[in-house]
Image 1 (cartoon, rainbow, N blue to C red):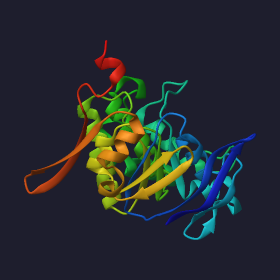
Image 2 (cartoon, helix red, strand yellow):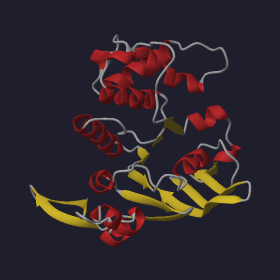
Image 3 (tube, rainbow, N blue to C red):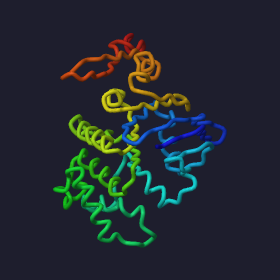
Image 4 (cartoon, one colour):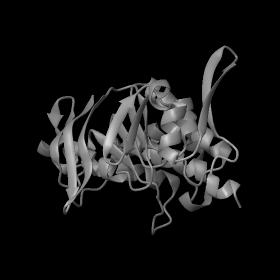
Length: 264
């Protein structure tokens, strides 16, 4: 379980996060939403223990502040939005990098780490890409490789910064379905997104940041028409349909909902 208790972050006199508290369980897909500047990146950096904060961040009741870099890497993996690399590694080399988080300085990956990397590639069904240059595979495949790198790290918590940014619809679906499968296998995945429809479709729990304050709960409880309209400053309507026996929610912005656009 990942737990935050009364977490606050200040940058100078500005308070960015205000008494944030929540519990996230293993086996959950969690989406973090909020406008630009709401504090999403700051929240991730807090969990990763890379900035100063007050309050507590705990994994299985253990404070992350008490963990070394290697110990924290054994528990949390982080996938940034931009995963460009200065060297044109192969796919296998990219995944193998995930194992180095637990190695001592200057220690090289050995047979154990090679086996972990191969297992991660097989787990995601992308072993056939292992000899390809990372730069020459599709955006969706690149995102799967970064997820495999996190799996090779053997962390049960994965934090992803907008994993579907700049991906086409097909690759977005590929990545989101893989995230769903991994949470069904017991991982906790926390991802940020600007798309409420992705959250409505794939999240088990929502974290919504507004002006440093956080609301959490099930998608149906948090992502209501009124809440989304207030968040984005335009009329938004949430709909529900049934497809093959499954209830699916989605949202749409109402046409002509912005006065300064409608009056042009």
